[in-house]
Image 1 (cartoon, rainbow, N blue to C red):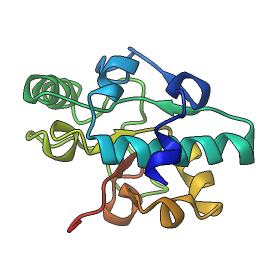
Image 2: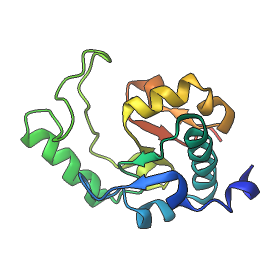
Image 3: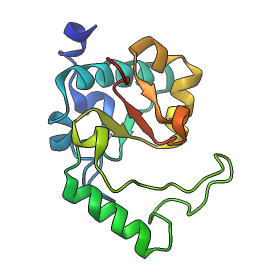
Image 4: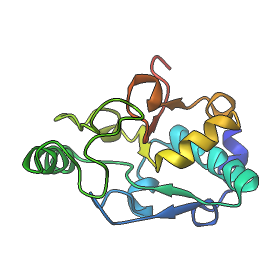
Length: 149
């Protein structure tokens, strides 16, 4: 799958944004781990085929400085992230960023709109492409390279 995904133009299957943390850009996506990037490109291509939508990249590679800004903004806003609901009763928790950069800092994660990831899950794309959905650990806008691989 990786070889086939290497020929996918990211702009054909992903919409990039500089809103929010500024880490949802094409440049940041291209700096992610190559294996993860190819997994996401295949996932995004099939998502577009099934839904007619490009996958939206809200955030991908983050530096520790980016993560600290996100965390500080969350704290300054009283526990909410601008442009996201402060509390999401559907998932029963706040969208709470952590202070350390984690998988995003290793180029092994990407955030997308929850609605898109929910739809992707309905089509079995996480399982098919071997990507772990953050919903499994209470972070529904997040997808990452699977732990332990």
